[in-house]
Length: 344
Image (cartoon, rainbow, N blue to C red):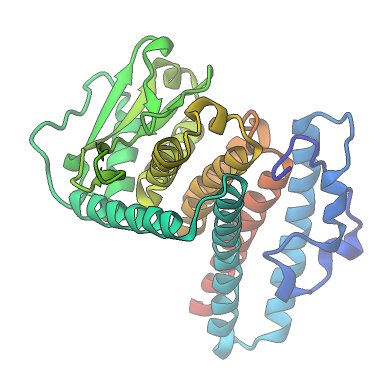
């Protein structure tokens, strides 16, 4: 299963770590099968070894770039690193499409209904992207939110071309009060932050049609009071994760899928959410929230790596995900060192 807890680490030799195989930097290596072999090693031990290999790999790759690129063409090396970073996002997009097709096939969705579903997803996402450009009168930013967290969320929203006044930001004092992700999926018992995205639906039973309203309903980022007990690095990571969910609007994909399956194929929502196909899609969306935000910002990449080295996402993100995040952080560090050398 993608990102399973049983995806473990391999202790890499210096030869493997320092191999200048640049074209394969962004993909999992040939020894990736070791990630899928069960061991009793704790998650933090596995991640510590992965982190060591990334540091050694960083040294080797930086030396390789400096040896193979003259000072006047280091910009080509920078472009190569950027290409490697983008490959992580492209791979997840491919996996997302495969997961969606698996859902279509499992429930026998007709091509007509499937195309209509995809069109609704795209239409609603476009509307919500436009809706998040403008301020909305009913938006609230809770004054009890830690200053650092609030400022971080606002900064990240602006960096992603989202008007902070289009998103409510709330502090929830009691964990039981934390709402529902996308108004469909209940929060995990240890949820610290979550993006809540809602859509309006109606039914035209006469013509047997499901009607998805594309008008933007202001979204919300909910923060648990447990956020106060986390480090600044963790707060930045949690905030970046939730903001990226709003940027990707992947909750809309899941929400519309659920409504289509329920209306046209009588698929129970709870049963669908327990299916391995839905779980895989959920895993991919959670991975995207951290991978894409790390690709877009080297500071986020470092904080995300530090958080995931000590803390996994139950039932979703484990060693394989940390391998990807730590590799992204490694590539950013190489990029920054090359950039410094280029402008010296």
